[in-house]
Image (cartoon, rainbow, N blue to C red):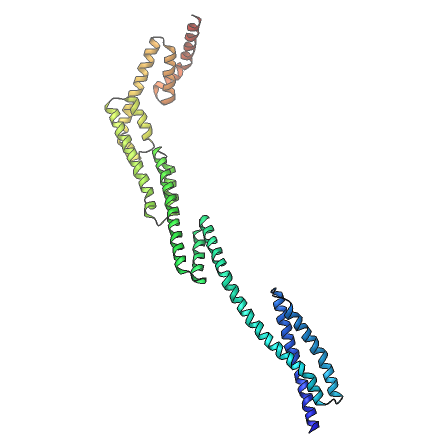
Length: 331
């Protein structure tokens, strides 16, 4: 019976120490984890001591068992180890519970800080006019933090500011178009209308801008035609020619044909006026005036017969004008 008890004790000690070593290593690993997270070195020191104690006690117990030491002595020697292991087990449970409570406490403590950081990030995106990024953060506030009412209010604020931003951009573009059309810079006005339509293709007000520019252009052309007819009726040849030069940029080939005969008569009248004025100035020896008229004919009507005649006389008229100015200065 005593032999069987001794064998049973040795078998128990053989199984006990591996188990003790495993528990001590677990305690050491927990200590390393806590130390790495900055939660103290106590558990790490306890685990290290436990591993060392098991590694020292195991060979001694094995040696005692092999030398025939009584089972009762071994059991008495192992009693403190059992107690220590139980203490380790309780300590590990308490640490696990404390760690869980610590994580939850941190989550509660940092929740408000995270919320404030998210609010600041949203406002920064709004200030940069990063509307898409701001809405992404608002959705995170809604889903991750559960602040649905606040998220909805911020979302409405973002949408309102985005709409105001678009409205200001459109108003600035329309004002620029107005300035271009007022100064008859139609190409620039069309370019601005096209730019706005590409930037805001879904807004009806923007899509119609190009048509509005064309309507203003056609209205200005109609006004020029009316002004031209009024000057023709008043026999204002110079005024009619001024209007014709402006109309040249607006009339289509078909429209130009419609007033071609009238324009030809206007220029014919003007050339006749210049011819008569030149002849009178020469007859009265007003050489400076004659030279000025001849120069105007060559410049404005270079392809006419009168222009050819004036080219032949320009040098002579210029000399006479200079001679006359010299004589006058001498007197």
